[in-house]
Length: 424
Image 1 (cartoon, one colour):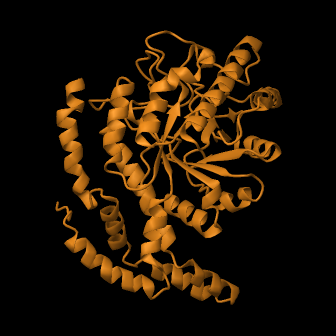
Image 2 (cartoon, one colour):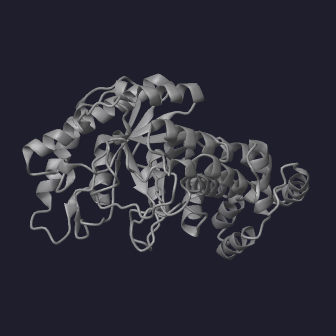
Image 3 (cartoon, helix red, strand yellow):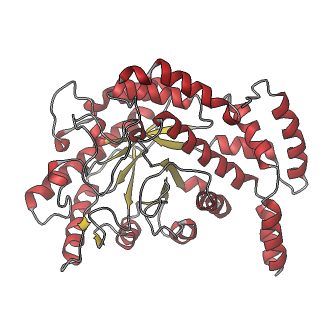
């Protein structure tokens, strides 16, 4: 496998591709620049199988599971940051970093999740500022003794209080991130509450969750420091029959509260794509948070790939013109393969899909549609499938200073030999 780092072959192929796209009225240089400028929030939890730093041996509860035991996962914040920095050298484009609450570093002290403060994330904020990598944040409603049954929808007032305080604390931490980096941090709220079998009372838990969210979001935060988002799900392990925070529940809540709605590509039926939801929901909320994942038969959080579903979502975001009000993040975890490679594959695949979307001559499609030439619209869509896209992608990687094609394989192999396998 050859890596054309000298750029000669890449530039030659790109010159021809540039001319082909120009024939359709597309400026490839502009598309490359725009694709590189889309901030993608890379998720920390791929690096350690969602274990966190609370001393747990692995992920538990919450309808999610990490399978596999590939050697060399990060065991602490320093290792996770080092792995992330290395992965970022192989990933083109603007990047953010997405943390969960249970990645706090309280200097060896046992601090309950409802008592965590911004200071417990000081190392992350210092790293963020030094590396110029903005942070995003998530409350953590799983892998905890009080999350076995329900969290903010629990009928037990003491359990509900713990999780309300936890979520409020997480929101304050996200706000501190925003102040530290000079731009808003997204705070995403997802919780696994639900029922394995048919519930008798569906309304009660949702009423309690609504009241809990109302309390959390009522606290004022410094302007411009945090973007609140709520994330829906169809079902999970242990919540096959009923999920409190369903799509309909959170869509209504986001519209009512005018906060961001999070759509995860793996949180719906395996045959359902979220592409069509984007234009519908964007009319009624200030913004969207899109989590890119890949579900196989269920919400299995497989590594994001350059799939038809992902490409369609990216095309819809670009065609609709909502890039400016959509926050993009990755959300998957695979413990069966090299974790750094998983970051790189998912990040490059997503960036590739956005580049393809930006290269689409959508103006021609709209013109044909407005003229009533639906046959021409369909024919153009077919024609676009064979445009020399890969040559433009290689040029993007070259311009970004990251390996072209399979050239990153050797870098990951070297890092695995010199760093990861020594952790075993």
